Image 1 (tube, rainbow, N blue to C red):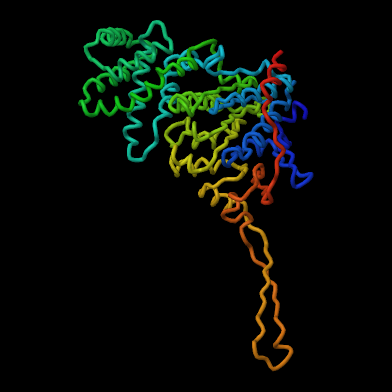
Image 2 (cartoon, rainbow, N blue to C red):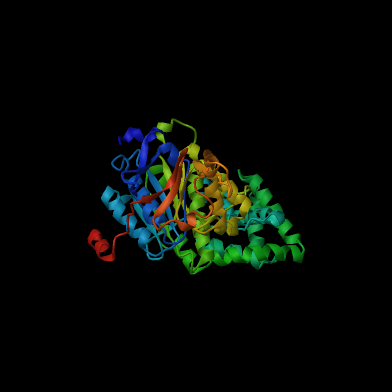
Length: 474
């Protein structure tokens, strides 16, 4: 593929070979890829090794020599078992892009600067940070008022900090939020001094923001004890995650690197966080990284599409970092329908739809699922997924034979012979229960408008062993 071909939507960019049927393969054009890809199936069925790994390898190889069109990637690894990072190092080395890879985990020397929006855009960046943090609040129809109001209170607290703090850092920001939201004291000298300095600066270019911040402080001060305790109970789990040792490592523990480098310069940004042993911190880190990717893509302005590289977000376990709702611009429901027009795409994996329902609710899950034009169905026993596959993989023709039974007592040879009649009907190509009976490594697939209703045995690719990884590094 030439460097200029990456901008033609009808060009093939992914080709996944199959063992069975012999000689077959699953192909995706750039238009298919930007329709987003979902890989479903139980643990160990081949989601990562047979789809995600081969797709990553081919995306890294496409136009790898062109600095203007090479594909940018942001990978969120919530298993943190080392395999994904080992595979990325191998694939980047083979593609000649090892210098493009930036890995952030508990052992790396890199971190993500959560305060970067404020450094880039001034006080207006506080809204971006509050939106990222508010994405962690569980969506609920009956609590919508409290969620929206708490996000506003969080924004006002952040503005107060950024407007008054002389030296701004992640640790100081978290300490300020704890003192302001959890241990609020209207007579605190720190707050009185900060508010006095704001009142003196009302004539600056941030006058409207300052006035709103002061009004929010007065509201927070006059709230009754019960209402304030509700907001404090919402702030407590969020601030507990922000102040954890792991979160501090990811957001202030080394040299800062930006997710925007993946979307703007074709870098490969990989973050590995153990979302099983530390679920709240895992959700915090992965949600913020995902939100920064969405922000970076959505900030692209309309211009010549040939100047925009394609960039993708890869989530190896989507339910661990899924966000729902429509009021939050960082939610999957809103972003999946928008980033395609900015040449962004998502590749996600999940063991079932029920896991997503537990995280973001059935309504948000259905809304998000409507944006995936490519779906791979590996073996699984999720009822919702079973019904989804049966519905969307279409129907096939089936010939039925009707045969009449001869009468026991007959008077002629004609009546003694059975009568046969053939008729055609349509049945589901993948009936309910078929996913549960698939062999390991085989899958049905829906790629754009193409339906693969015969089981495909995709060729796997694996992460290198520890010995091979050491040889590559040397």
